[in-house]
Image 1 (tube, rainbow, N blue to C red):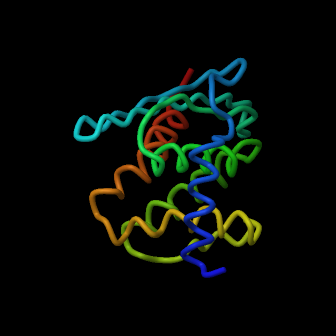
Image 2: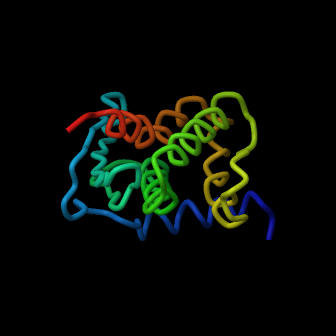
Image 3: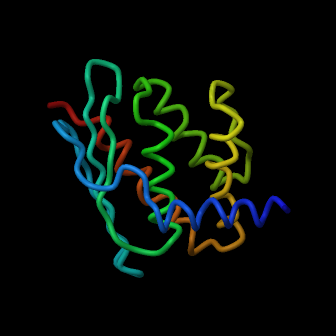
Length: 146
């Protein structure tokens, strides 16, 4: 199977069977994003215990890319510490903006492949917003003080 086909398969799987969809129990941080141009919406729910993301989920509607990206985000970062999550998020956003590779070496090969599946949107600048829409409110939710 070619890499492009694998990436498409990963995106379709996450879009059709999103992980961590719904409000996570006991969330204490949240943030929303909305793209009025296409109608995509995402709401990130985060349970932050000290420096660890013990709960992470989303609600939303939109295209396959925005839903898959939110699913991949929650699947990758749930249970991780704050500093690691910020680094992965920064790496992901740089990957899409600068066409770089994921550099976080503590991710598994499967996780890197899954996150990198969204790199195909680089060929379609209007779709970059779809792929990044869940990641920006995650950063906002991480910064909120409760």
